[in-house]
Length: 409
Image (cartoon, rainbow, N blue to C red; front, side, top):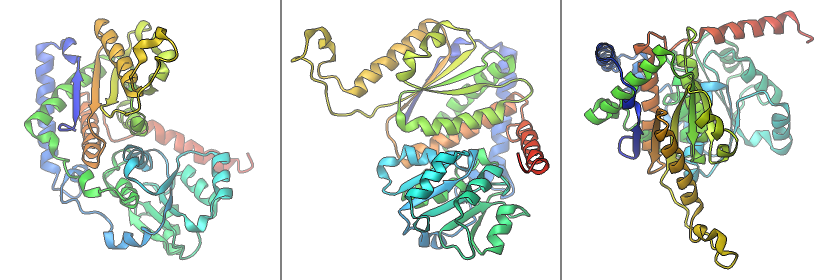
């Protein structure tokens, strides 16, 4: 990302008192030392960053699934959002059809069942706990599992859960979910890497530059952004984080980022509410609020430098729109993005800009690890546990209670 992505921000306009800045800087340095010290520890979360990370599978065992041209992923949240981001980001390289079931949607799954021969589709079923009710429900609805099924891969923790027990009793192909990684942090582990391998992309390049944020340039960008964002979070100054997207390939990545930020930092009555805003479409629905509504919003602006070749020709139509002559759709969208940034700059609304030069595996891997580390560090600097999700667990417990107490509802 440091090599192939331009990052700008206007955070320096938000002044931090010297004592406060020095306190956050010291915490940042200590956190980076802690992370570096834990990278070789296989029992640590940060082992994920190790270049020699040992997967819970062998490539030779996955090769037998390469024959499948149609692959369906069943999961929720972090178990599937990362894979969907990879698929969308690298779609030009991928020759297979992937289907994602990340919600309970009767019509979608019923239509899928009717239109496809399910025996010819590979199903990858992912749940860290092995008990995710939506994942289990979709799996049971499809009726695809039976003893010795050759088109099912189960990924879950090795514990006494429904998915794990099913994989054992029915002799299904099973891969252990790293117990040290929560779902939203698991994209660079088995959870995202196995689907990526079966997409035909280079999984080694995705993980190639995971240490890039420890060099001087990468560390500087991470330090300044993390300190400013932690300061915003501590002051509870900006409640809404608008992910302003001008690149369709990034939409699924931004939904992955949305979960990462919301679940990791939304605690103790503080947090950023991340909202994916696809543009320029939203210029015509939300822009008025963005620019003239409450000053409770922080903006991340995403775009790319890819340019389409087809140009507009309007001379034969009318001189009134001559300014569109020889313009590409990309250049029109770029003008709209530049106008938006210029306007929020004039209004002193804080923003960050991410401009992609290339869509490849290395860039995507660096992008994943940047936001993973930044989110964790912001949590550490703001005394927020970035790894738990206590409120979500309350809803899961109540959901199971209602299902068991009211079986006929």
